Length: 214
Length: 214
DNA sequence: TGTACATCAGTGAACGCGCGTTCACTGATGTAC
DNA sequence: TGTACATCAGTGAACGCGCGTTCACTGATGTAC
Image (cartoon, rainbow over all chains, first blue to last red; front, side, top):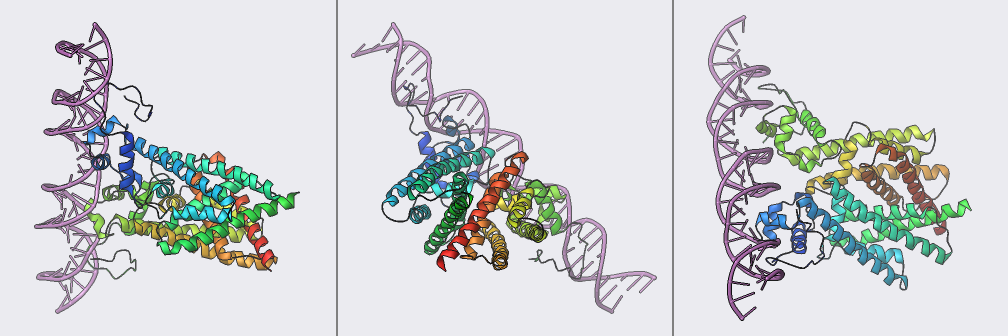
């Protein structure tokens, strides 16, 4: 049984690969598009899209689920980079909340389907899927938590249970983003405003609670 | 083409039905259990569970999607009743927030799969599905909004954008509930505590924002 | 440089399976007279 | 009360389809000598 997902470019012997795991991930991503769930992808479909015979799929992944998990991980990583950049950029410009939320929702309009993917697969599909999505959400929460604490120190405001604040914001943004997915682009501006207000409520709340406790 | 979902018990002619739409809904609900998505149900499977021939299914629903939408509506209605009762009961006992959240999460442990269903199907499946779930969430939001305004008046606290507060709370509770679904029951107590704190943050936040604006 | 050999990505054909849907039917029930 | 008839829920058989997986294979590439 090969270990194909370990992508260490080991010294090669035998026939050269015309296609790699990455190509299959790309093919799968193309197929799911903004509206389909990974769980509806068939092995044959992905192979077809990638231009290989169905049974060649097994050279790269044990089964469709293994590919799906790899795709989720890739999506999470890509998204975190985007949001991290947005936060850094925003720090010296205007509201961090507003511009982070903005970048997040705007991702729905780009050709990339990474966000759609994470928004969709969290609640459905095999346990392995859900676990993979949960893991990505945790990463988001951790990074956000660090940022929140730093920001609170910077501004001298208190912060109550920053871990819960980070979790609440992350889950809320993903949940609302998930429903925004199916709305026309013209509604996105409104969604961004509303989401920003919701996030600010949470932040004002945690500050108020911190102030009360001292 | 019959209109089977309209359950007005019209005067009957011809052979008596041994099974009705309701039975099929029950069979489907049994099959999805706490972990499967409706979208993975096959017509034959539901028919088998209900004890009829596959083609008899068409006597009751146009297709599987029509059944799924009916099931989602049923789930939403059932859940709203439960939460409404919880809120009324709590009003004269202890924290409305805490006990509402408690009842919500405890639903995960009951035999009923209504909650699982709503938590799952919101992001996946046909457009008709998602629309059906969105509709149910809106109902939740509306009822919660009315309650929040009433509570604010009662306690004399301000409330900023109660519509957004209701939306944020609803989405957050459903999102966190969705991940709690796959956690062991022993974790539920912790989830309830955390959720209650998150909801209180939002409420404190809206109060603070209302106070600032005046 | 040449040759024999091992490696291994990709293949074509075939399998059995569950699926949605169709068809012409059966036979129980209610209605008209 | 009896009879002919319309209604219509449920059926059994059959269809074509896409699926995941298997098998023995091909042939390009790299390695050893």
